Image 1: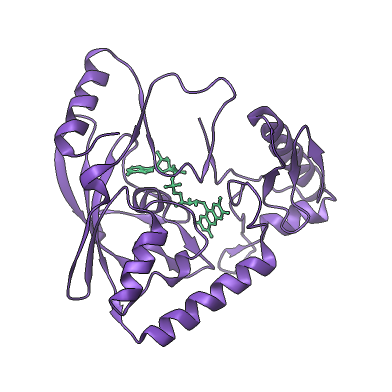
Image 2: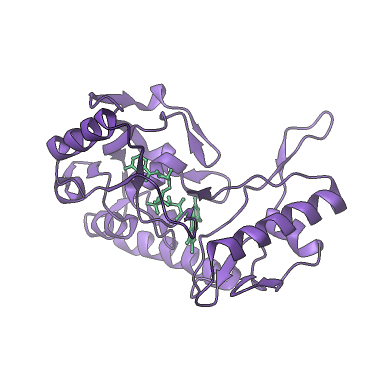
Length: 269
Ligand SMILES: Cc1cc2nc3c(=O)[nH]c(=O)nc-3n(C[C@H](O)[C@H](O)[C@H](O)COP(=O)(O)OP(=O)(O)OC[C@H]3O[C@@H](n4cnc5c(N)ncnc54)[C@H](O)[C@@H]3O)c2cc1C
């Protein structure tokens, strides 16, 4: 748990010297970790990486800060933009790496002015918004690069309107997702439909799994949520292998029934 860039650089140099792989952990909210654990160094940002500051409408925040903290601080300053992150249990670093978002237009990439990263060799540099490709739940930030800090452009707004928007998104989530249970959020990306002469449209992975008749299907202590079929819930004591089996069943059935390949949104370590 490095407290600053110096600590982090030393960890990377140790990893390089002894050829030990490293993994960067945010809050682990988009990960499925093998029952055998991880063979390598797991790095979680702490200390200075949890600091933040404001310069007018610019929010400068460390990669280790939780989105919930960012949203609360922005609200206190009367700054709008982060409302869509309500219910996304990640850190800023994890959210940028995944280009976390809600619906089809709100994503963290839209707010980024620039991002500070440390590369595998310990070199620190800033990347402007233009230098990063923000895609659907992915970015072009190189694997192994660590997001240290980011500048987010927010907009001034009244606290009433920020709260209203946040509450409405939260209510929608509560209705449609098993938020009180343990999961890794959406397991699969929503596939794109490439229909002739039309722009690619997203199809809901959850609806495909539901139509394949898999809502509620269980394996060990894991089951496909009856509330939202793209969520696999751990009812307590589930193994990663239980979740992996359900992932394979969903991929196989959706492919057999609809000819669509479901691609993972979560990462498996
Ligand atoms: C109940 C629930 C609801 C969710 N809803 C949504 C949603 O609506 N929209 C959405 O997009 N996601 C959602 N997610 C998924 C997840 O919360 C997001 O992807 C989140 O951004 C991941 O952040 P994290 O800090 O937990 O990252 P982790 O899961 O720890 O890591 C994810 C990836 O980011 C990398 N990473 C983490 N920190 C850094 C860093 N500082 N520098 C470089 N790489 C880093 C990791 O190495 C890994 O590759 C949901 C998850 C849950 C459990």
